[in-house]
Amino acid sequence: MQKLIQVNNVTLAFSPDGPPELDGVNLSVNEGEFVCLVGPSGCGKSTLLRLISGVLTPDSGEIKVFGLKEIPGWAQLSFVPQDSLLLPWRTVLDNIMLPLELNKKGEKSGVSINKARAALNLVNLAGVEDKYPHQLSGGMRQRVALARALVGEARGLLLDEPFAALDALTRSQLHLEMMKIRKQTKFTGLMVTHNIFEAVFLSDRVLVMGEKPGRILGEVHIKLEYPRNLKLISTPIFASLVGAVQELLEQGWGGNNE
Image (cartoon, helix red, strand yellow):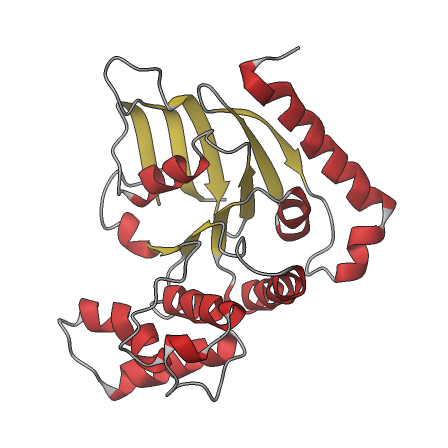
C-alpha cells in the first residue's frame, strides 16, 4: 500500500532560543486511509498539518507526499481550514471554481463549471450555486469549503478542525456526509480535531499527540465497519476505543508520563 504522507523525525522551533514546537515527530498515512490527529491545545497539531502542506519548513527531518519531497507531490493535496475562508464577493459556484481558475490562469470553462456543480452535488448542496457565503449557514459554508477542496480531484485532504465551530447536530450531519463522500471518492484524509468522539467515529486510526514539545504518543486502530452510523456511538466497543484514546492523552498531559 502506497504511503501518501510520510513524516520522518521532524523537529520545528519557532524561536532559536526557545523549546521546540515539535520534536522528533514520525507518522505516515497510507493511501485510502482516514487518520485523525488529536491532542491538547498547543501541542502542535495544526503546525504539523501546515508542515505537511508545505506552508512551513521543518528545522530537521523529512516530509514526503506521494514519495516526493516537494511539488508536484504537494500539488495533489487540498487543505480544509476551520474557517471556510470563502470569498464573500463570489457566489458559491465561483468559490468552488477558484482552484480550477487558478490552475488555468483565471479561465472559466464549461468543464470547470460542470466539475464545480458535481462537487456541489457531492456535498449535498445542489441548488445554492448562485447564493453568496453570507446567505449560508455555518454548516453549509463548511460543505462549500469541502466541495472546493474536492473539485480539483485531490488525492489527499488535510483538514484542520473543519467542524469545530458548528453545533452538535450540524456536526453529526456533516460526519455522515463525510462518510458518504469518502465512500464515493476514496480520498485519503488527515484531520486535526480536539473531539475524541469525532476522531473515533470518522477514522481508521487515531494518532495521539503530547505537548511540550509536541510528539506522537501512540495510536489507536479503529477496526469498525465503514461507513458508520450514529447508533455506533452508544455501543460498548465505541466507548472502549474512546477510552483507549483518552488514556493515551492523559499520559501526555503537561509533558509528564506518570
